[in-house]
Image 1 (tube, helix red, strand yellow):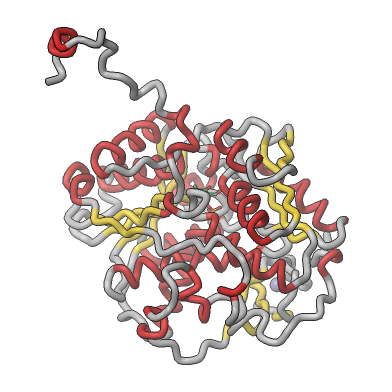
Image 2 (image 1 turned 180 degrees about the vertical axis):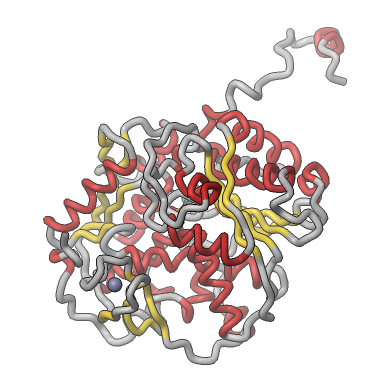
Length: 423
Ligand SMILES: Cc1ncc(COP(=O)(O)O)c(C=O)c1O
Ligand SMILES: [Zn+2]
């Protein structure tokens, strides 16, 4: 197994290319390595993550920044001049008080962090913006990814704006809107006959063989993953610089959940929020629920599964960060749960009808799991809760087309309208 992409090796890095990031550190054995296009520990094959040496950072400095993720650039592995290079400027999405949904579920205080309004309508624009910066600093020629859909959309769009060649790989059975939302930005959408785990394996092989390819979630994964921290920073800032008591997050690879937790710990360490306990909850669809299964069974490791669910964006059967998700949910007193595809569909409609937010199947999974966690007594209805909506319903229309539609089809007459009984 290769421990770095030979294709991206030995870049002449400029001073400050990664801001306050100082090195890569193995999450398993703690071995450190210089910043570079590496993602696996040379000692133990554990995953590498970014370590920083943060200066003092104030709330005022952050608030003076732009209304996008670059307001937190001092906390990310990006250069200080990041705003000068073309990118999609994602982030600073709405945190909405969800009183109607709270009442429906019997919760005292609920917020929806609505990341469906990012430039390509999912949270993936955040991680891709950080990966694009790394690819630029490494002098990559191609910007690429294996994807369950949303990531491919974000890579294709960001690459177009940055003027770098993009190649995005997806399972060939993906929803049509997710395919079109990539193909419109890139000539190089590659549909692979296999599931996400097959596509991911292929991408790793290409990354090891091809010169100058930056696979955002493979060989630049440590840089990419940091982008999800901005979700946590924003939630804290939008709550008035404090942490929620409970947060519910969808889990595919598990990267987002681990990074939101990391962001909360960083804010505490930097003195930007008060130190207080919070519980992290993970959401999966039953048809692809290896992390939820491991949580329920009390296992420390995640047993890979073959996905079969309408929540295709979450259909990763062998999640890279699954074991870390388990640790975080257990440590914080949270939980991981899963729901059926029918419950996912119902939750999409529930969120739409209570809060006017149209989410995709990943958000349906998250809201449906929130409901289940309340019903099973695992989530405390008295505590302040945030649920993350990570993507937009227009990309997974098929999931609800059988549940919603015209209440009546009528002749264009007043009499026909009255007869329909809608008034
Ligand atoms: C809409 C949406 N939500 C959540 C996730 C899960 O992200 P992660 O792989 O970081 O767990 C994905 C992953 O593709 C996604 O597309
Ligand atoms: Zn190691």
